[in-house]
Amino acid sequence: MGSKARMGFGPLLFHCVLLALLVASSHGVIVGSSNGGGSLAECNLFQGSWVYDESYPLYDSASCPFISSIGFDCLKSGRPDRKYLQYRWKPDGCDLPRFDGEDFLQRMRGKTITFVGDSISKNQRDSLACLLHAAVPNTSVSYSDPSGSVHFKDYNVTVTRFLAQYLVDIVPEKIGRVLKLDSVQQNGQDWLGADVLIFNSFLWWNRSNPGRPWDYIQDGNNILNDMNRTEAMAKALNTWARWVDSNIDPNIKKVFYFGIPPIHMHGEDWGERGKTCVGQTEPLMATTYPGGPIPQESIVRGVLGSMAKPVYLLDITFLTQLRKDGHPGRYSGGDCTHWCLAGVPDTWNLLLNAALLEWN
Image 1: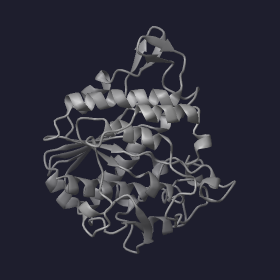
Image 2 (image 1 turned 180 degrees about the horizontal axis):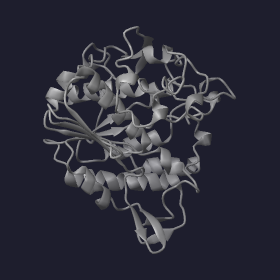
Image 3 (image 1 turned 120 degrees about the vertical axis):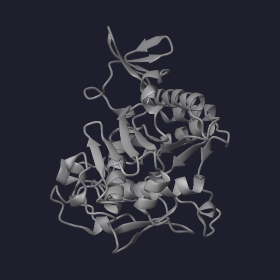
Image 4 (image 1 turned 90 degrees about the vertical axis):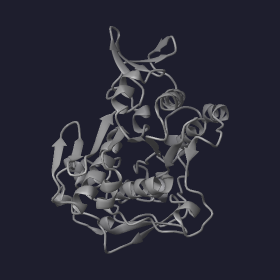
């Protein structure tokens, strides 16, 4: 997915024009600075390398009751190698804070943490629930499935997720299911109760029929069979951004946007033409990703940068691109999209924890 030629979102010329229209101001998006010092505020959490660490994984997947897809538990699915479980993300110039699940629950006491987006959000929600459960295995917990809410009763902390692949609304009408690029009112009602919101939207923008959950796109007053998906994604993200600016009080709620996760289906992206994630057992040890950045990263940054309210970008794309070994692969139907648990999503949540500490 790192290669621009395979994105399928529309011509590169359109992409460049669109980026020109999305030039960002700097006040909306918060990321760690890259001054290279030793503290969190002085280093870039999202640039670094994967180092082998025998103290990993951070939990035993067999002891976690909250992994919502059997394919996410790669050991249970039959994966025989274990080295992929034992890599720790090391930012350049600092270390991520050690994850203390009980401290996290104390800091989040009385709050709801909500992941919004596609199945990658489910991957990350499952990971956080497992990390917390491993820290306080004897605490009282209620679990609502398939809604995916985990309530840690002793701390009154809820970890939940909402399915919203495009963030904007899909509304059933007489003509069929309509993806409304200028409406987030339906979905937004589900988000208002959260104290910490982590959004993502990318993978489904390129999904074609069959499989997509809409029949038509509404762009303003126009009902379309389809349109340039890069343009549609940008319009939807701007609609979401307006919702955040209108509905979120940053003194009370924190909003994160989860960066674009890669799919490791094209080995030429990391120098192994003809390969996929299947059979990969080690990360790519590199300071840059050979396949280059994902073009839509710039759109995300542009939209976030134009916002009035602060949004923290969890810029996980590069560090996740390096983890070609982290997918279920052949042990879940050749899945190179989702991620093993325990595994890479745990690092996403360590970064979330570090960002909350830094933001506060």
